[in-house]
Image 1 (cartoon, rainbow, N blue to C red):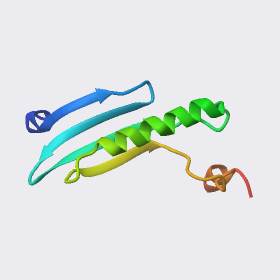
Image 2 (cartoon, rainbow, N blue to C red; image 1 turned 120 degrees about the vertical axis):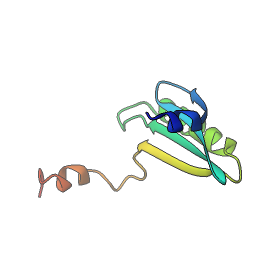
Image 3 (tube, helix red, strand yellow; image 1 turned 180 degrees about the vertical axis):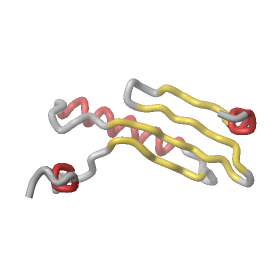
Image 4 (cartoon, rainbow, N blue to C red; image 1 turned 45 degrees about the horizontal axis):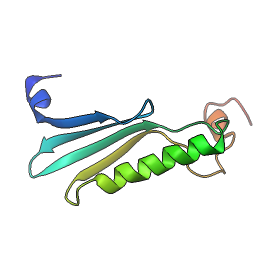
Length: 92
């Protein structure tokens, strides 16, 4: 990381083994980044529920003027089954 980028890091927080947040100074606003990895479908329902509740709390903590970026490995919805394999040409 170059020195200017290092100086722009205002704070970071390792929320859990699955989630980290960071806030960067960027004129004229700050950038709030959340990097996370959701539990797989095979995880128990309580683990998934706790993950998404924690993620919602993090999203609620962002400041109104923040540029917000959420990234990671998230599966949203239930209609994606098999699509990853289809995209890679493994299923027809």
